[in-house]
Amino acid sequence: MAACFFLSLAAILFTLSLLPGSTSLSTTVGATYSASTAAAYAAPPAVDRVAHTVSSLGLSALRLDASDPAMVRAFLYSNTSLLLTIPNQLVPPLAANRSNALRWLYIHVIPFYPRTKISTISVGNDLLESSPKFSTFLLPAIRNVQLSLKDLGIQKISVSTTFSFINVITTAFPPSNAQFQEPAVDTVIRPLLQFLHDTNSSFLINLYPYNLYKMRSEIPIGFPLFQEHPFGFRDDLTTGVRYRNLFDMMVDAVISAMAVAGYENIPVIVTETGWPSFSTDPAEIDANPVYAEMYIKGLLCHLRSGKGTPLRREGVSETYIYELLDKQVKQGRNWGILYPNLTSKYKEIQYSGSDCGGFFHILIMAVGQLLVFALLAW
Image (cartoon, rainbow, N blue to C red; front, side, top):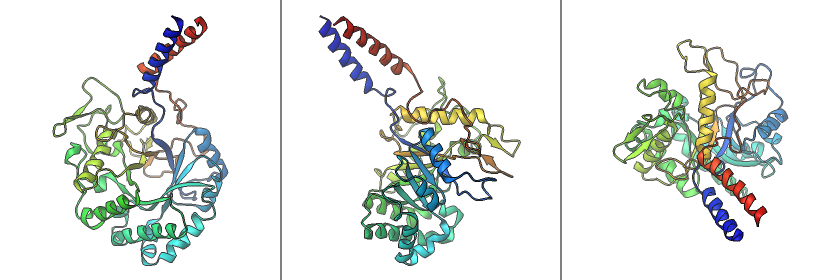
């Protein structure tokens, strides 16, 4: 009798462990880190301290928005994967000559890989907005970097570029209406999507619910902050999908835009997302540490749920929180999850493991206790 009870409880526990909400973090979560220059930080922290801090926080990845060989070296033999960024100004010379791509790799990758885990190289960051005159050079530069990696026998580092949601997507709602903006869709994005499809690489996007919330006054504050309320949802009448947070809506807008362009199965990496804890503009009252903590905790819990997005069950493959450290801000916003001295800004956030609780978490704990009692009785 006790044996039957034991087997039944074991079956229940196994089944519950498969349900959404009881899973561990299903998306790689990291943070972005800016170049340690005097303009960014009054006293730039040592690279080994940064590496130790990233590891102690439980972050499994770091995105360097300006690749620094010293920082790449600091992650030798660590479990942290790196996403490297090639500056926009280097795109034309990389496009002109593959030897320039090889030269960059010999400085930033070859001395460290694979002892340092490097997952992806982004050729440029939001180039269509910040350096539009370089747009014709973008895909040739990406191809030269990818071919150079292949020449070096490196197969596991993917190559892509990073876009900004607001600058390339026509609309966030309804997601089914989203498309890539003209003329970039034909000149840059569709050829890039073909390249990503051929090389099994990811589409990289900077995605900020805060910025969209500031642009659209009709969006209630709870929607971007992952606060589920009885009427806190938006329905896409075309697909019949119900959205309960702005992050999912924006991700699905990207997925819809790729589908319209003819490429619906390319993985998506969110290279920047976050919520500012401070703004020098007194009108930005929503840029405060309370809302910033709510956003990050809500984001992490959502990623841990394993639910993905309504249009993509597996969700995004990687998400990077912007950013690791507060910079010096004269005019603008602070986004860091840490202060410049590397101390934590948010005491209650766990960047690894699971601290979301919820019904299934409690139920599994209860069944686990019954299982212990069954073992003792048996």
